[in-house]
Amino acid sequence: MLDNPKSRRSLAHLVDPIAKLLIKARITPDALTWFGAGATLVISVVFLAQGDFLLGALLFGAFGSIDLLDGTMARMLGTSGAWGAFLDSTLDRVSDAAVICGICFYYANNDLPNSNLVVSAGVIALVMGLMTSYARAKAESLNAKCTIGIAERAERNILIWISLLITSLVTDVMSYAFVILAVVSTITVIQRIVYVRKQLVS
Image 1 (spheres, rainbow, N blue to C red):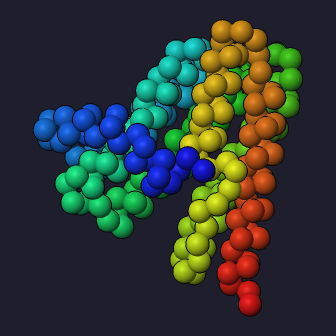
Image 2: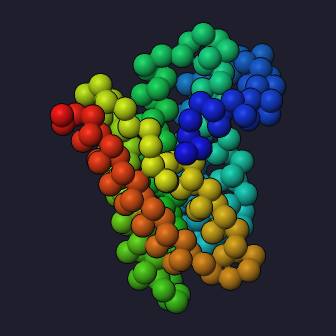
């Protein structure tokens, strides 16, 4: 829902100036993509896996903006293409998995209420999140459209980010958040399967 050109255009007035500054600093879109993925891995291991959810959430939100910046920079430089799209999509999957695994690791290694539920729901959410991306990639390889779904990457990350903030500042809601994440991710996969079937079966 939020991972679409219209949503990105609405944020252009915020993203474009930063992208221009990075280009002036001779930073390439690919380098920024690698940096964002690496930073997310570090955040997941150093903060989320250790239960430091507040700082982890703040950094996760800050570095999440890189997903908008690298694509914007590539368009400004006229270097948008298949390679950049492939690299960005591949490293996005790594980043998404690192965040969920980091949170699950913390709950699996600490005697907290609903730890088993968090880990179980987290595994389902992780698998279905990856399936959401795979379904789109496979559909597009078959010349079918597959950009629908109630929980694309942006929605999933926002849900995780908000749940990290609430858990660190108010009360532990991670079990609820991961159950919701697992459910909406599963629904998204089903939506995409049904949508693509209508295109390919006639």
